[in-house]
Image (tube, each protein chain N blue to C red):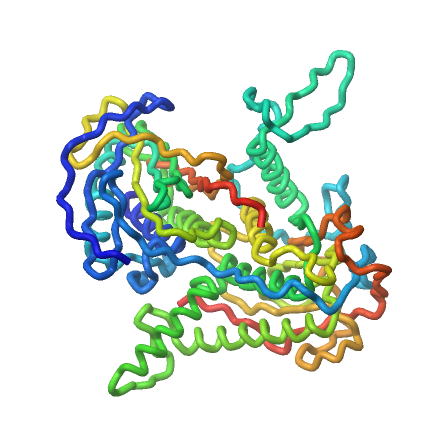
Length: 395
Length: 186
């Protein structure tokens, strides 16, 4: 980046008219001189251009082609699960223990159906309403208002039903499904306070620690040694290794079998975990050829929906615990690392939070989806358990 | 509150990649690991801003704190983090403000900061060099300090918005939102 010379603080003021409020909008005039050689600055005024390095999170896409094809049917496997029809508002399960995943503070329930932008002449949105002789047809919603309405419904459904639905506007690949599960696992571990930072940040910190240790002339290795950033090095390393192994083995499993459901059990036992999350992909439609959505865009859609639903964040501290991964896969898929648990049944005495991923069925015909995939024989699918648990740590 | 604002700003600058990650160091705050810039000049800048903000917060004259991220080349506003601050002025007047434990406050702040981190998973990539501005909405009759100037709101054209959790202290309530430029379909 170009080096910038130091600039003096600009003392003259620029009068602007704030047309939106009657209040002052004040902006700091303190000019931050550049760092020589770094090209890092803060833009203060329009005549003092400054440069800032940007770092982007990489949701790099994989190849879009897939070897497998088929639509995961809507049949459910033999284990019991919640039945959440569009008209149902309660689970059939016995909720003997509530899992607090939301608090009262989240205030993004926006009622906007009646708050219509009159300048929506160019809107392409349509709201279908019942009409009667006395009813007034609502003008179409603007895209932003429509988005707000969708967000409000997402939040309502998450709070009342413990379910978040994400419908992709197209087909996905098996590799994409594996990415969805992997990223959701990482997200849940961080948001449920089992990791002190995100997985990517932990990996970065680990590499910095390793580099720092290599640079030291004499390394004194002691159990429980902390990193320069206050992390318990050994516990961090152990958890990262376990998590990396789970992620790698998930890739292997997804290459061997369709995986319609993944369970993440936090704490407690297999019979009665403290928290239970399900990634349900029964209604995912796999693409053949190159007619699939980009994984990065799907991931953004998933995480934005999860964010709006406020399914994972919690103001209350969550105790450190161990996370078990269960996957539903074909009994003869030949996976070696995951262990079959033929007698496992999805816990019903704890409320599960379901993240349901699906594909828009209207995109199926002529779009490169598998032809004649037919119904999946769910009786051939059994639960497999990861042979290790991911132990949370906080420091 | 001003300390929280400082940590929040640092978190956003780190998570959105406006500054290289190696220019941040981890510190323990609110019983969690947070990123703080080690860049001296940026630190000084933020210290000055936050110290002024602290005065306004004490006087209950600040209504919003906004962090705007703009494209350096085009000056287009790409992201807008807005923190709406409600001040309970009566809490200052009476001898005993509303009771709220430090632990409870910190729990809520921790939740918000974790949410800021989570936004990285869906906010559009900042693929160009960016800069940031800090805007403060104050009462109209406030005397403008020397080092500040009036500014427009720097609203994003065609934006999407998500709301973060709110948190409250004994005196203030903060509602947070992030608006970002609506991305083209991938």
